[in-house]
Figure (cartoon, rainbow, N blue to C red):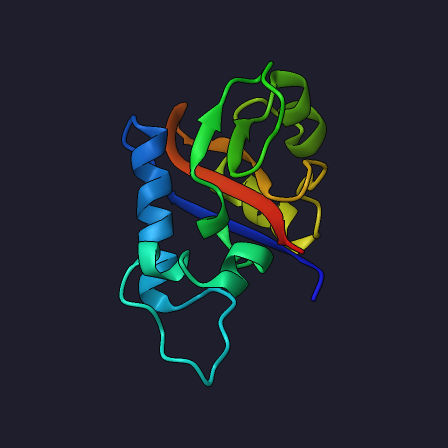
Length: 142
């Protein structure tokens, strides 16, 4: 099938992991992930990942990432890494991008998808100098 690029954002209240969980919950509840339409949808994320096709191909969504790593850590399966100051400046033109900056980059297909498959990048989005959202994007699939 190939890989799919995806991008999501969620409200940030001080805990990136809580934001990632909220994004993942939202994706699962909406059914916004790769699934064979003739099969009944799973009742939980755990059940979803018991499916051999999902284990091999992924969900082509942020459901495929589940842990944050440090900026100096090696990208790995299921990881999310915050962009460095230099990467933020290169992508957004600022180290404190706003939600509008993010939307402009998404519309221009300009998010930096340079991470390995099955991993993601992320950035805080700022309003009035305060981080109010977390954006997460990546590409997953076989």
